[in-house]
Amino acid sequence: MIYTVTFNPAWDYIINANNLKAGKVNRTASEELQLGGKGINVSIVLKNLGYENTALGFIAGFTGKALEQNLKDQGINTDFIELDNGITRINIKLKTDVETEINSRGPEITNSAMDKLFDKLDNIQDGDILVLAGSIPNTLSSDVYEKIMQRLKNRGIKIVVDATEDLLLNVLKYRPFLIKPNHHELGELFSQKLETEDEIINCAKALQIKGAINVLVSMGNNGAILISEKGCIHKTGTLEGEVISSVGAGDSMVAGFIAGYLGTNDYEKALKMGTAAANATALYKGLAKKDKVDELIKLL
Image (tube, rainbow, N blue to C red; front, top):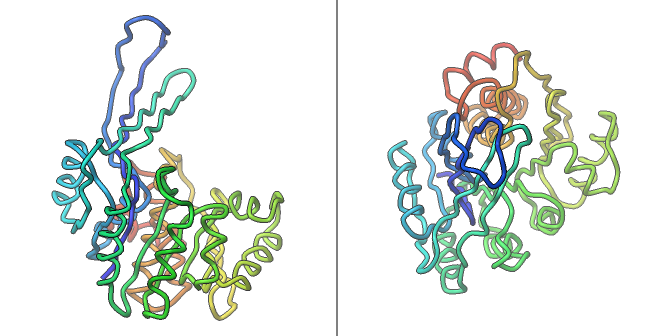
């Protein structure tokens, strides 16, 4: 089984408003409500690609119940912990002459709620995959990913981490199966701007030395590079087309890679599946669908 963890899922309320005037009553040109959260996105794309998975994490209030029901309606298994106070956050994405985002803080996750999550994680079995994706709410200690991986070490669980800065660096000692920084995030880890493939590869290999088993680096319009556990370097380019939205593309790459790996046990094919999934999200409306992924992977 595949499990994803999203500590602070959200509804993203996307508003398009022309000629916005501060201090006045404004009318929207259009609005849309989407699920948000990196782990949630991974769960949705995995399901779209035909892979059963269970979404773990925390929800609260009526917005949390609606989020959970939406996932269930998509056929995704959920095992959320419902918090006693607050509501699952609603983030506002305002698109006008200047794009503005207002991200909510989210509900407080108590120690007792965390204990419930640890109990659920204890039931994950040898051979299962666990995806830890996204930032940590400021109501939690910054070492929560470390605590999870320390608790699950030597259990034969393949853990995928999609995080940034110290949140990522501090878990490398626990040998994550896969990490997926983009090239900007990779450069930030080494306090440098990475401009060539050789620089990217050298930094990715340095993360392997620190403990990562496989390092997948997304490079936007320049495709992706995978440094596998065998030391092989695999590359994919990008696909031509007008980008509709890059939101969720990185999460789609993670989901596609997992699906490709489980389906073939081949890292090169997994990279192609991940790249196709990322492009399917970027070039078409919504998160990657299987028919688009199958279509695009033939072009890589």
